[in-house]
Length: 63
Image 1 (cartoon, helix red, strand yellow):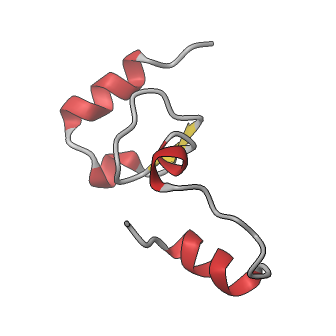
Image 2 (cartoon, rainbow, N blue to C red; image 1 turned 90 degrees about the vertical axis):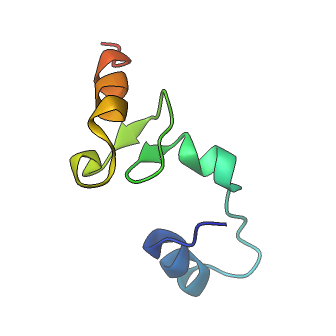
């Protein structure tokens, strides 16, 4: 499983009873380095994703 900074902080901050989402659910929340076709949000995707995937993300935006 990809262990990112946010998960590291959550593991240290919240009680052990706090349940983190699995990787598939987490990918649908926000895209940074791992592509998902319709995320809830994005963060600095231009630094990590190939331009082909950036184009797909931009095309999937719904207003």
